[in-house]
Length: 332
Ligand code: ADP
Ligand code: MG
Image (tube, rainbow, N blue to C red):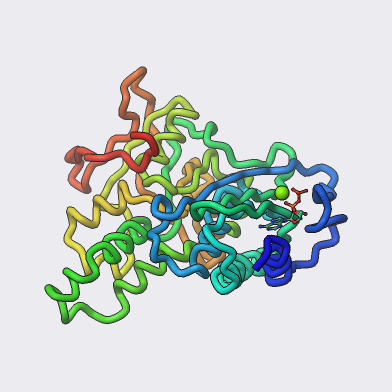
């Protein structure tokens, strides 16, 4: 299959009509109209095979995840998704793989009425770069820098599931031998959270105008909350026992393992945000109505000068826990 056939295949499978796309795939650049009074929010993320997803990941899941991780960044800004571009590097022009990849991408694009307006297709080791564009009212974006001492710290959903899913994939053979009676479907549920993260777009919109700071959890809850602390010039204290576990996480892992996944595991794409006590109860009600609620896990405290660790983690008795590894970092 030739490059242009591949592009046509992807274009056809990802067709989403939008009035604001004046010129889509096919020319040297796409042309779009940004609504008056709105700012354009732009974000890019790359997925490298074997680094950001296991080599054996199904093409559909790769397509889904490549878009999901990008939509998650728009969600964390409180932006409404509109358009995307896709730079695809493939070892071979495999139409079957590309078709399944496009179906996964299109499933999520369709859900958010997001138009694929362009991209690039090249040959090389499998790597996918998506750039997403969305809108946010001027002054309406959720930033990392707005957390204030006294705010509550919250997280949507059940963090830790994706890291547990990766553990399940890595230990599939050993677990099958050791735990033949583990309830069916629990591992699959966790693996699904790894392969098909659901970007919290509706939740990001609900937070707009209420949350003081927000970030999406891609590298690990503690690591990403540390970014909020650094940008806001504050510290945070969280109670590990207040982190809500999914029923699969609770049934399959002991407390220590669960905590490690919940505090340090990446790839969840939940939102971690801060809000004042006055706003919190309305906000939690609004979030629950979106179908994905949030939980209060701690509070923002004064920063500790140049101390390297700005996020303190305790258990419910107040005993401080040491965090072995603060989250995923490339080149470390
Ligand atoms: P150029 O040589 O001008 O960069 P290309 O031949 O790379 O153009 O691409 C032709 C058209 O197809 C452009 O509109 C480009 O945006 C689009 N395109 C190429 N690859 C992809 C892709 N993977 N996904 C979506 N659009 C693509
Ligand atoms: Mg090109």
